[in-house]
Length: 288
Image 1 (spheres, rainbow, N blue to C red):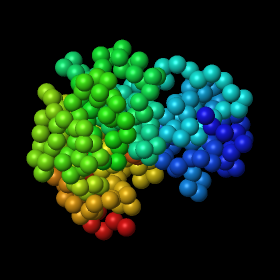
Image 2 (cartoon, one colour):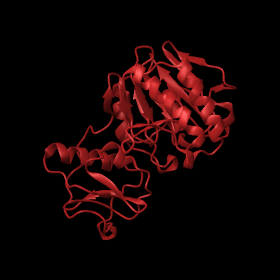
Image 3 (cartoon, rainbow, N blue to C red):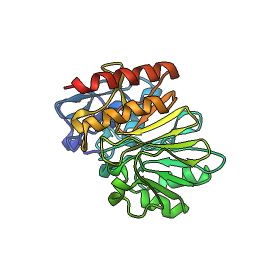
């Protein structure tokens, strides 16, 4: 629960606020950019909600916050059913991000042959009921070592298979399916895993039905640049390897949605997505 006594002085006046325990993960700004902004190294409320829809969106950010740093005074009851939040078709944002993964977004993909969880939210009663109602989980797909969070709890509850690359296996020794090298592999019909070493040595992306690309921390959208970006300042293994990996991805994958763990998601025309990715790869060697 957010602490009114620790309300950040950078918040605009009004009911909603962010407290100073914020870790600057950016989750609220990515999810509700019209209400939340950044000051210094923490998020703040930059605009107060003006209608019921805005109130609902503020509650989404509060429920997604990994440190429970977003609150309202006077308090009102949290609405039910905030997450999973439908993004597109069978893909939903699971919210309830974990501080262990620095607020990384995780996703649910509903499929007739078994649902997918991409990276892991906090294991919570609010979400288990929702996932139970949608038929549970067949696979937990981990993009890299940073965003494992409560994956083991989710896998054990549903008897799900867990996928991770061998080079990041130390973060998920409970995994049932271990990838290696740079070989592309099939997880299930229509679900492909493509290794993209760079952010970490064992980073991978998951491509579903040549439409939805789950990119972990390897690729995202930037509101400021209005373009695809990679995070040089948060590249833990090798920027040159990531450049090569994303170039290979541009050759291998056709996709419309970029669905990252950190950074905003975006829907693009497939040809435009490829063009933007190729342009990103071309400028990465000189990126500051």
